[in-house]
Structures are given as C-alpha cells and as structure tokens.
Length: 226
Image 1 (cartoon, one colour):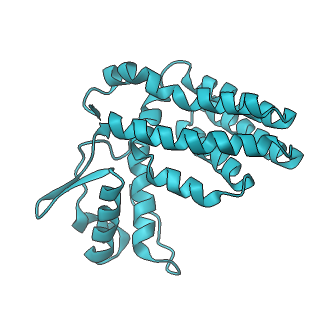
Image 2: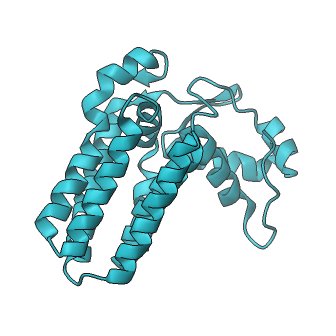
Image 3: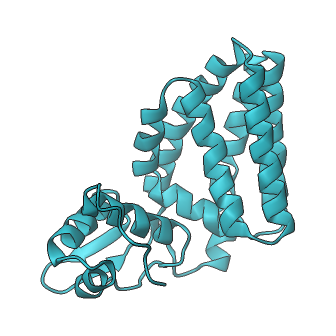
C-alpha cells in the first residue's frame, strides 16, 4: 500500500510516524515484518533522515525493534507493556468520564451517539477498519470535551501494545457488538449525570481485552510475547 502524499506545510517525520503507527496498530504491518528505511524513503519521496527519525520514534513507543546496521522489524506485542498502558488509560479516562457526567452537555451526548451510529454502520458493512477509526474518534471526543485533548495524544503514544491487542480481539465473536454496548452505557451515564455509572462503564469497557489474552494468543500465536 502506497502512503498518501505528505502535507508539505508540516514536518515530514511526524507524518511518517502517524502513517506507520496506524498501519502497525491495524496489523497491516504485523509483528515480525521488516520495514526497509530505503523503501519507505522512496515511497514517501523523502531522504532517509526523516524516515530514520520516524522509526526511532516508533522504537521509543515500542512498536518497532531497530537492529543497528541490519534491519528494523515490527515488534511483537508485549503483555507487560500493554498492562501498563491499560493502567494509564484507565486512570485518565475514568476521570474524563466523571468530569463529563457532572455538567451534562446535551450537545456532547448527541455527538457521541452519532459516532456510535457510525460505528454500527461500519459493523453492518463489515468494515472493521472504519469501525476501529470510529472507536478512536469516540474516545478522542470525550477527551476533547473534558478539556484535555493533549492527554489523548499522550495515551496514544503509550498504547501501541494494548491497541494491537484490541485490534486482534476485535474480529472475535461478540467483541464488536460489546464495544457498541459499552459505548452506549458510557454515554447513558454521562447523559444522566451519573458519574458512578459512567466511570464503571469505562472501567469495564477498557478491561475486557486483557481478560481475553489467552484467547487472543491462540488466534495469533506468533504476535504476542510475555
């Protein structure tokens, strides 16, 4: 798949990071695949310097392993790193849900429910990639509404391992419908001004994938470590 044209008004390396991160989390670049700096530079129409910088950034996020003077490969999913990312995200997002439930913003509730409807349409069409994109949008909307949009970026930078686990979990029977139910419960709690219900719904929603690690390992035995 050829990457989209770069926005020349922005620095190149962050755009390469965004593109590669999305492909890695979507499992389009699965664990173990080799990422050639030269080939990527050619595809993006760049020198190798911004591509090298992008790969180093992804190494910091744990998404690739760089073997100096040899090769760069997409890392396997580390369960320990996934657990830590889950802890971070849960701690933040529970507080986000509480904050959103206190003022009860009907406009936000309408926006979140529209995103859930978009997710349902994607699921009906069998488009799990778009379903995942709408899933991310749902949570990003919550962070923005709570006035902490930068924390979403922080969470995303630390969530590569747990996000890939979630992407592996998504095709398993019942997972996608459960996400829709969880999202609806979160919004219902916010709409009622029930912070306790909103928090509980977020906690249950975010903890489900890690409770299914053994099931995920069976389906993807070479993708997961620890």
